[in-house]
Length: 113
Length: 111
Image 1 (cartoon, rainbow over the protein chains, first blue to last red):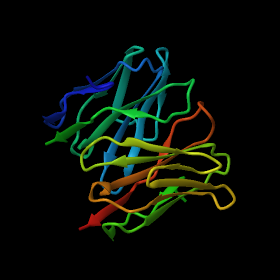
Image 2 (cartoon, rainbow over the protein chains, first blue to last red):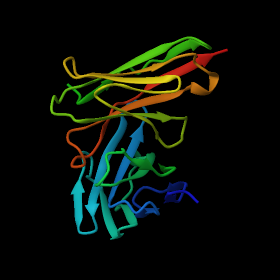
Image 3 (cartoon, rainbow over the protein chains, first blue to last red):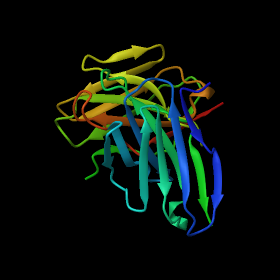
């Protein structure tokens, strides 16, 4: 099983719908992140959480919200999806006690029509 | 100026050749540096950390130049399987800051 699991893998949704992307991890890491990736723009940070009670906005948080339900779970919600939120979304984790970089989930490809 | 910048490429390199990429960063307080590899439509995977003294892992060598604020990745004897996008990532301080990624350099190894 993957260390960082994202669901769903692919999703097509209509404009205006609320959707949730989920992320769970078995690495025991305390820190979790949500990024989106668009061609030519690279990975951009949406939200991050350094522990269960800590939630922080990233550079592009408008239109998104998150919930850290447990140390192992971090979900991303699009309150009212719009077409320019079509992107590849990645969840990532890291350990505050070690400087080993991030471990990424396999991504969710979201299309808003 | 972007915090982390990379030449997007593409770099088209014959198999067996040596190829090098650079990545510049703007914040002189940056402390941690990484190279990631990303295959098409897949997640980034950590390739190697970049240490002050430089480090090598098989055909891959990473170096840090603090004076000029860049990191480099050298791939020797390139293989077809090295074709991917290479992302650099920078963190301002050990364990206390989020990573900032470059947009990536696309590498294609030609048979």
